[in-house]
Amino acid sequence: MPLDAPRRLLGAAFVAASLVASIPVAGAEASSVTLAVGASVTTTALPEATTFTQLSGLPQDTDTYGKLSGVVVHPARAVAVYAQPDGQPVATLPAKQLGSQTWVPVVETRKGWYRVLLPSKPNHVTGWIKDKGLKKARSRHRAIVKLGAKQLIVMNGGKKLGTWSVAIGGPDTPTPAGRTFLLAQMSPKKKTYSPLILPLGTHSPTLDTFGGGPGTVAFHGWPDRKVFGKAVTHGCIRVPARALKVLSGLPLGTPVLIAP
Image (cartoon, rainbow, N blue to C red; front, side, top):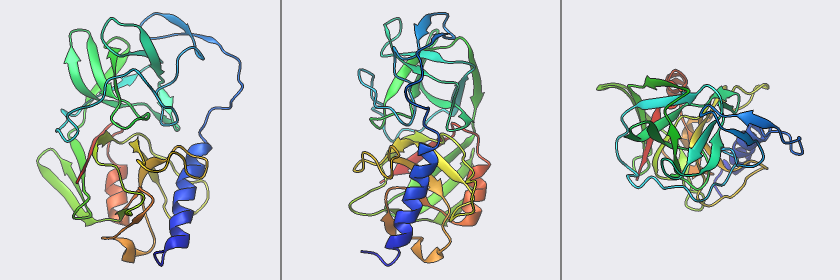
């Protein structure tokens, strides 16, 4: 077991606890909501596309390492998610999650439709949403994690904002590869190992749950610089203080490429 194992457990447990605190209270009565597409559904009839849910019947992102356009969209209110345009809705994408606005990257466009990356399990799940009732933006930023080099690079267009050595998942709890996105920004109420937690739209491939949370992978800081450049985490990416500050300035929905 690595020397920093107690801190490893503390760090992963804190991320999990932060996420658990954001889980909607179970047992609430079902209520009818009007989606941005104009259809009325019961909130419990369809699963929400959040970091806590496992979705089925939706297409996978097959261009796992492709460069995203930077186009991101935010639903002003809940929108229906479809497996294909003009099909039947299979989920809803909420306007907020983890205390932040929901911004998701667009991976494909058709007339009247966007196919977007979703923050749910399985990793790389996507869904189609109508282009009505959405705010649209373009992020010039992207973060690249090179697992082999244990390195983080943050770009703004063609300009490199910084390169840092980072800690990644260990052999039994690897950091998942593929393209994902910056899902939320969370500030711990109590002083801890990291002033910010930045959850991503991806999950541990080996831990279905950890500490009561869904195994969401995140960027976060770490007080002991000796861990940087090592594969010692439960899947999260530990970054130096300066890197965390730069990452915290990126817009939600910013593409994150985790490369082998």
